[in-house]
Length: 468
Image (cartoon, rainbow, N blue to C red; front, side, top):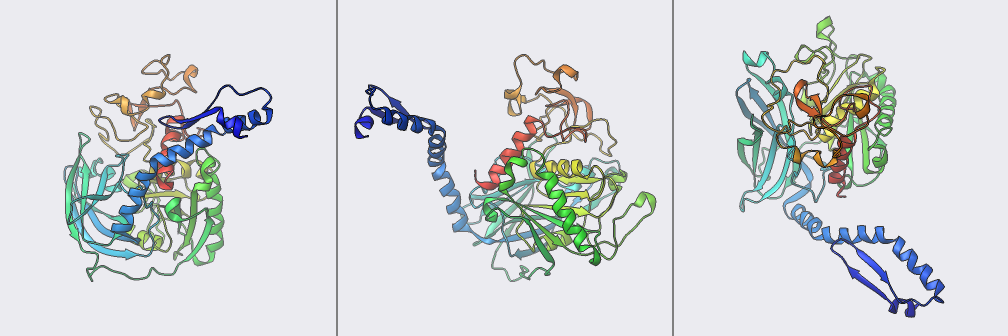
């Protein structure tokens, strides 16, 4: 074997090791077979070397976490308030919660998604330690007709790993032209005795799926809403069933091993939810309701304080509220919350669609359904959602996935039904906004799955959570 290896060269290219063979005598058959196995292992070697190249970056992120954070969460509660033209931040309580489920290495947001973001800076050095984009129900309300006439507030929270030293929190709002503007900043001392450090109420929890440590997985928590004390088994069965819906669709199906899913049973006094348009009101723990913004199917809740308090029972990256009703509806907000009804015939499709919003920041690709929004997008700027474009800066979107033979804009005809293109219509608008596929889970309930563009975005978000 040594003779065979003496006639080989192994050299490091920019991305991978490659084995080059020359002048190997024909009678070294066993050696040649062995070397062929080495060559077939090239993919494994390439992945290993990429890991080695990324190791300093991973180590740096790990060092930042160990030096500046601990494995608890800090929850900074606040109200977002204002009207169609103004926004204000009203600070509330700060809590220390028992779990931090997020990555220990990917601490700063690289995607630039969301209508808002918050950033955590080391107070002494000014270094950025953590950042996260998010969406809110308030921002959607700002685009309604009601917001032109009155002021409202919506409950929010910035959740981040618990700092070891003093930090500065900054909250930024995305402006009409797409840039961020800081609207609030404050200094936080983690040793302040006014920070609430109480144990969460011991609601009953269940593990639906567990595949590893929270900091290395996507941690999803399902909260019960409108399930009474006697309906615990129904909730747990619903949670298990609906989890199965998620992993029936790609790319979640291929990434099931990258998820942990837990359920928290917090009983309500009454079954169901509110349906104001039909004068139906039920006493439920999370105060969910249909008819959000007077849209019958829009199922949301504004009681985020209660939701955060209950979710704190387990490690979580994303919160999903499961509402005990047969009515059609749901809602989803990036890095904030997803909501879905439990027992409608289209629950499968709605659950996955809303998770596309909440988990991956995907925009709605439909443009004919009733909505309450007015001038939701500025068509003179590129939207932040990765699956929508105004073609203002298409290079940052999925342009590389569009074939040279595909016309832009792409006609919505049968010949392009399975083609990544640039189809006019999306983001609630028939003109000026374009989406990447004729049909997709983000467009309709008839789609079989996510389109290639949306699937790619979801995969990147999964990889971010799992340090892949």
